[in-house]
Image 1 (tube, rainbow, N blue to C red):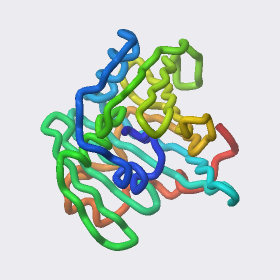
Image 2 (cartoon, rainbow, N blue to C red; image 1 turned 90 degrees about the vertical axis):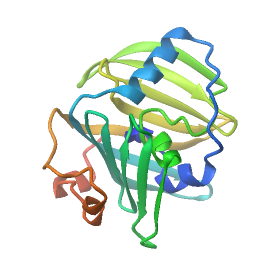
Image 3 (spheres, one colour; image 1 turned 120 degrees about the vertical axis):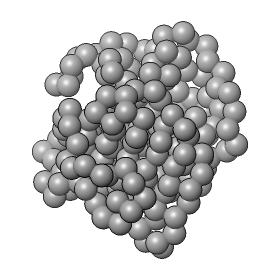
Image 4 (cartoon, one colour; image 1 turned 60 degrees about the vertical axis):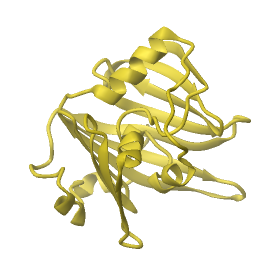
Length: 210
């Protein structure tokens, strides 16, 4: 998913991903927003902050970032990096702890917009909200293991997100720290570029708040 994935950790998404299937939508407006998130071609850099809830443990916080240009997409967290061609559904995942890489269509399905790695059982538009990044549409998406909410910009960028258990227990809260209509540098969508982070250091520090 776009971090913005939009996001639990990339490791969680890869571990829980099921075989791809056609989502079963029940809300036309939500369906349109999901499709827009997966096909946006705008150029942007999105810098997020994640609060990850852990049962019986203190919550964990970390930065995340997404970059997009045309059909090319990149995701970074402190522990993983992804590049994907969202039109061709080809992606490469690098686990920074093990050095292991995975290249397949499933990586792209996870990285490109609202994840299509698992069938969506329910998708509902909730409301139109105001934010410092403009007006956003909020939707709720449910699959067989989690409930996700997304705040989606008119151009398809996933600005904020939450992930909860089916009983409503929060797993992750994600919000945008900054959204800019440019990339930090060129050449960031090649496999070779995964060897280093392209996230400016200022976005790796905890912000004042959402």
